[in-house]
Image 1 (cartoon, helix red, strand yellow):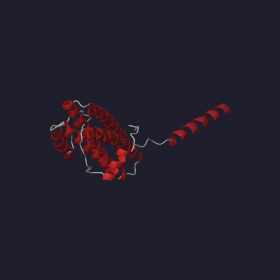
Image 2 (cartoon, rainbow, N blue to C red):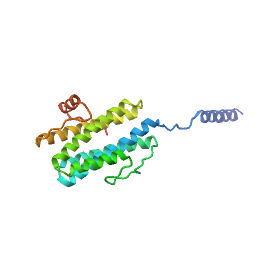
Image 3 (cartoon, rainbow, N blue to C red):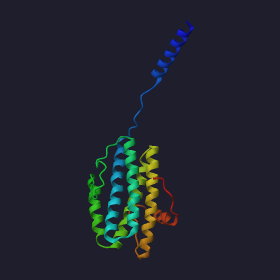
Image 4 (tube, rainbow, N blue to C red):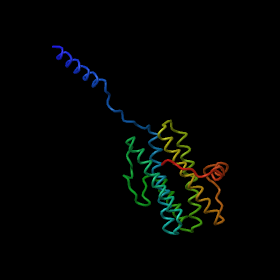
Length: 201
């Protein structure tokens, strides 16, 4: 009889534990965070695609190396989209020059025209892209309360700052001068004066 009572108590205990379990909650981003994340997905691809074009045309190794880094940036954004079940409009496409956001497609074509003019223009385009990336990432950080997104954007910004330093080094060797369009001159100078850092992509 004691064994039966003990067995019954175990069953009650298991049943109680199962009732206390709650289904897994799927994290959902608000509309603003989703829109920004989708924009960053394509902005990172724009950088990658422009740099691939520049490397193919001029053979400057820095463009290939930074394009490889941009591939990691794209994957980091896609990983975050997958985490929050945000559908990729490009469906994972790596086709050069393919975008779904009209303003990014237009910017890509404008920058590609500049890249095709000369290797000097290609370097200045690289600086402009990283200038824009840093600016957009800083805005994205300021506009969200999601810690996961903030960490992602901080890491992407870290990478963009390193890319900016690399392009500036090459531009200086070619006696080229770039004046920032998006971030302030003081921030631009501060980035160049600070050392390269290891970023967690």
